[in-house]
Image (cartoon, rainbow, N blue to C red; front, side, top):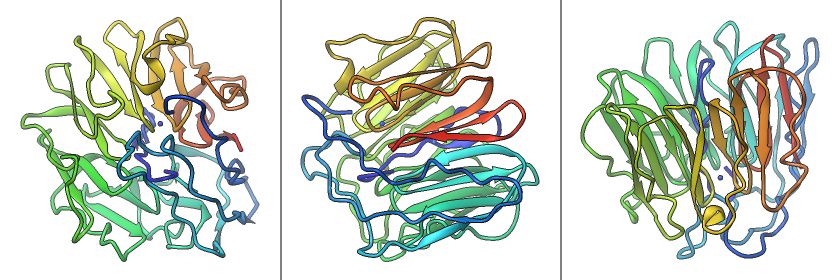
Length: 334
């Protein structure tokens, strides 16, 4: 997550949920994250210091404007070698992925320890602004990274999906109910940590807003709605992803719909039917039913040019990563 992000949660072979803004946007910061782990290699990815970007970074919230959190001298985390992955989540300045054996690999900025995952095996992971959370194989949550705001204190219980945003996180319990939290001592300013009652099937946290697909298929969004990102359309859906100041979802017929800042006057969605979608900061990507990728952006053409091939998972923010059908990882962007 970026200037504070809602990184889409990625569940095994599911939507990487695991985000733009009105008017002219500033170029996305160059972070050098687009270098995924390669078999037999251990690479340290040094990330430059970035300056705060305008309101188009993790959420469209003008007041206060979220800023990118970066250490004056970011510490790079080594990227462990692995031949295959089953889930990936792109955060603000770091990326985490789950290997085929269930262990975690994280790389990028490690100034707050967000790229130093715990040991153990996991089934889902979500990278946020400067912290990351994952679901262990026993269903419990583990969070790590920036600790001074207490973001590493998730609720107890067992969960099936998790998504962390700029200063909050949400997860779906095994009974389908939603649980959300803010950093210790933090404030639920926009109501981003006040989910609706009832069971849900999919979840995605943005910088200061969250959206979920409820059990009956309708969308529910809560939190910051400055750019209309928390005002979803009617209908029934199978997947949702909250981006910077916009959100996207897949309808039950497989077609895409997006709402929020970028989509008020320019409906530039790709045609076709899709199985997964991830809204980034200033772009979005989705996986078609044939496994190919489609990406789009009103500002950055490079972000909207995905690699060829067939994929099973995708996660976008400033950069984008996707898992190919053979389990290898492809990442691109600044």
